[in-house]
Length: 112
Length: 113
Image (cartoon, rainbow over all chains, first blue to last red; front, side, top):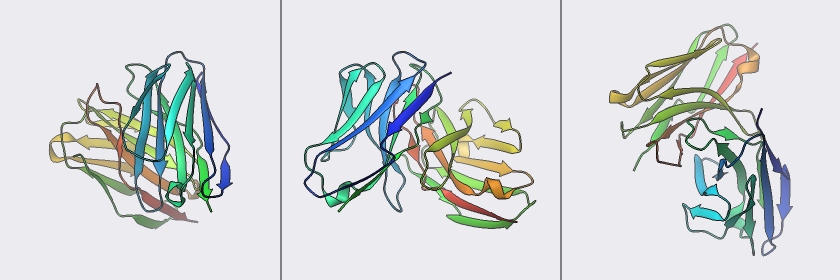
């Protein structure tokens, strides 16, 4: 069976500090990978997706970047966090050509 | 641009009641629709997925229906239990080649013992 891991679960970072959130998927190969953000009072917003190693597509211009150094690893980064980067970040995956999306447990990021 | 709306934003019902959650979308050209459950501070758990060619899907006490032409889906929960308390989200996928899900803001359900 497939599992998705996201860490850390919670993070408090000062403005201007760097960020690295990690997501890994086990039990499958070449998954489609996604980063979503859920801000208070708003729906989930797709930030990045990847269909393969080194392939990243950005949906929303912002202060964040994503990388996929390995097949089942997806990393969300920032060089300098802003207050507006606070939110709940969710990683998700889907089988290539699959229909259903599966989500991780999320990371609560608070920028202070 | 696809927009997904969920009404009501919050719902409180007594235990044992049957209930319906609503989801509407503005562009009927969808590939599928997925219902999720989100517990406070947690990730999303997939409940049901309906392909555009399907009318409904069932899993246990849950039944999801889809009326693509009218841009509506409902999630029916039978004999509600306190453990059903959570936020329920619906999301649509525009096409088979689309990587994005467009989400509603969710309905927060409270089932009172």
